[in-house]
Image (cartoon, rainbow, N blue to C red):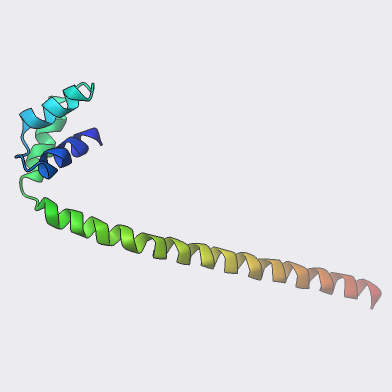
Length: 99
């Protein structure tokens, strides 16, 4: 994750994302850079429009609370239905005992 953060620091500073740049940021942060990870990241980012990727990520994160709250609501509704079924089952069991 720190490799990507280093790349984003370079990008936001208006600098070119290079192996040396990422390595310098990681060393300044006290991390031990891994050359193979740096090379892979620079190669991957060379074909990506970072501004577009950030915009897409912003849209995804804006939609995420809606998705999670919908999931929670469904779980709550399911729990309420299960409680009702349990209560109904208790009533049927007691009524059969007393006729």
